[in-house]
Image 1: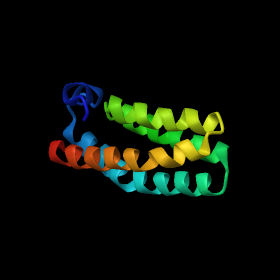
Image 2: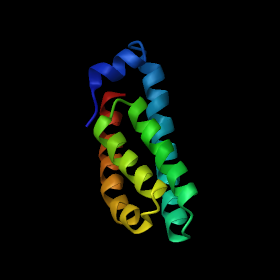
Image 3: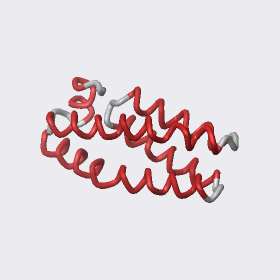
Image 4: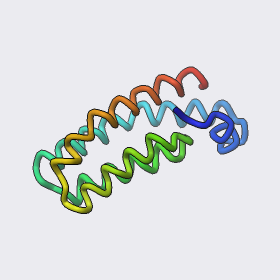
Length: 108
């Protein structure tokens, strides 16, 4: 799900900082998914790309390479104008984002 050792190294073993990052992630990812869904529904590829890019960065910073790659794939689809493909991939991303949140809550 995520590389625990890498994540702890990123925060310099600071569990308080990790808890803050996890709280920000839990607060922000659902809204970003909503923005992504809305952009795709309205045919706004640039906005969809931006939301997917933000999710990619957020998950990469939490050492969740697999989830970041899924978000990156959505970002590429949006950039290429494949809005139907991107819309079809959102549910899989949400499953990963949810599982990541739950796993991070156990560490923080």
